Image (cartoon, rainbow, N blue to C red; front, side, top):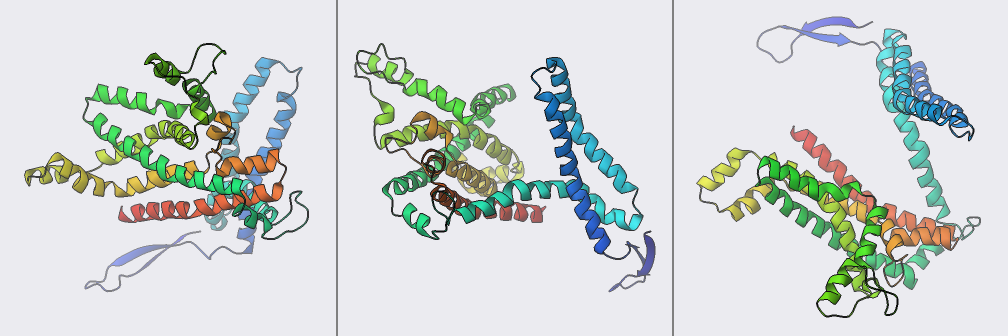
Amino acid sequence: MPIDIEKEAPESGESRPVKEIYKGPGPNFLTQLMRIAVSLAVPLIAFGILYWAGTILLDEDANRLVVVVMALIIGVLGVFGLFYAMNWLTNLLPERYRHYVLPFVFVGPALVLLTVFLLYPTVVTFRLSFQNAQGEGFVWLENYVEIFTDSGTLEALRNSILWVIIVPALAVSIGLLFAVLSDKLGSKGEAFSKSFIFMPMAISFVGASIVWRFIYNFRPEGFGEQIGILNGIWTAIGNEPVAWLLQEPWNNFYLMVILVWLQVGFAMVILSAGIKAVPDDIIEAARIDGAKETQVFWRVIIPSISSTLVVVLTTIVITVWKVFDIVFVMTSGEFGTSVVAERMVTEFFTFGNEGKGAALAVVLLVAIIPLMVLNVRRFQAQEAQR
């Protein structure tokens, strides 16, 4: 039971009571067991309910309406009901235990799921990267040596580095331009323009790739008219049709355009929010001092949103490192367009080389970790300033 304690305020000219709440001793062994129990209980109960529901939902003879209703009940209300019940049970514990156990009802299951579906696969992948193609015997660093000596994987690494340099730079630059221009429109114009530019974010990478296949489509002579938009325009001005995706090394840039198109909306929305957060007093003071609009932009707005720019840039870089869908759908990694993520899937599932595929996954993880650390530190710095 919490106990109120009064003591004299230290380092003060006058003595005045300071109220503290004593919450009993720190967590003991029993408390730790309770934390582990509630952390494991939520995902285990959820898995049990989903397994039971799956036997009904996957039954071919089950009524379709019943299946839909059960899916909605389990998906929407099930998680809420589970956490509500665990919270109610935890509140039945004695006060001294409740204070330490209750947070783990909500945080613990997330930690368990992260451990099972993220940490454990990472450890297994790291171990597999030191094994042979069948994932049986250890070959130690041979897979990593092959990655940095094989011409195919070196080409994938080179292309991925080009993607990481070009795509984030273009996406952030164009997104920043659209953010500035859309903010100068009226409220209706701003809403319409931002919705229009943000729309590609609602499309999956595979869907966007299919859309752009129709843009880059090429038909050799004798196979009908050109249905690709780009070739339609190109031939309309008197040129011969071009197989855009076969033009090395330019085909890599044509594929990058797709990801830039998808990420510009994300960059625009986040940067627009950052620009709106810049105090008007600072901007007006700069204008009164005689600064031109370009000077206000580069010397006031950009420094004010620098942390937002870094977060957007690193987020897009992480997305670019993991890009697979676009390359796989458009070219299957052929014609000099392979990237690390696509090569990883190809080695693992197409060639059956589990060791090399896992090693490529580890290379991707090592490349992404510094960016994640940078983002976390940025968030911590922003929280410290509030």
